[in-house]
Image (cartoon, rainbow, N blue to C red; front, side, top):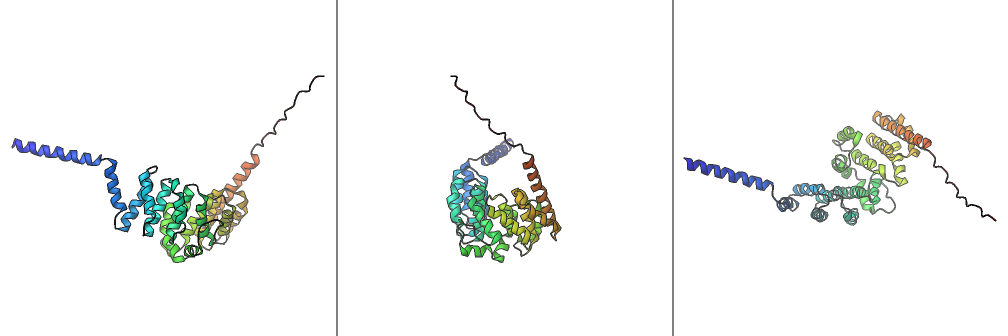
Length: 289
């Protein structure tokens, strides 16, 4: 009986040790697990594994894996790879992301454009300008065919969940954005594009936001445009925001009001800012005769 108890105890200790060792395995074991997802024949599993690469900044192997996935035959994997490269801060991947702007699928183009913005490349803003306005900014890599796809209502509606609730958050418009995502509507994608343009230094984007705020049919897009104007902090857009106070939709009025207040505060701060004192002239002492 004692020998049987000892045997049971030995087995228990061995099993506990094995579990502990497995939990504390080397990174190679972890990579073998992740690699199984990256190379899985199931597209959804590949997408999931590729997205997780974005959680590994500064890891050369993760960056190489994302670059490999950027050439995957499935658009979902390619878009996940483009997003992951931005999330991990892979600045060396800018050339590949610029090439991805010529992809045939809008989801990949949008993800690549966003990552370029995150990585500090202003060319990425061109994607969102094209989405919001339907026009191409000078110097962007979008082709006529790609612009046509980005304006396709069905394509845009299909991107709603990924863009609206994915890498471009709605912020204060979260509830309205979520409700819009349940419909066959392009509003979430257009709104996300407007919010992204908030930090684009190109004056063309400021004008695009002003046009969207004043003329866009969908209220969510108008509200997002005013939110972007608020974040942009350009007092020259204050008249546009003031007009938005008369919008037929209350949610848009609120966003316009926030823009007016913010831009007014910026104007006032510039008025009271102390002027730099003029530089004193250096006088040279006169020579004594």
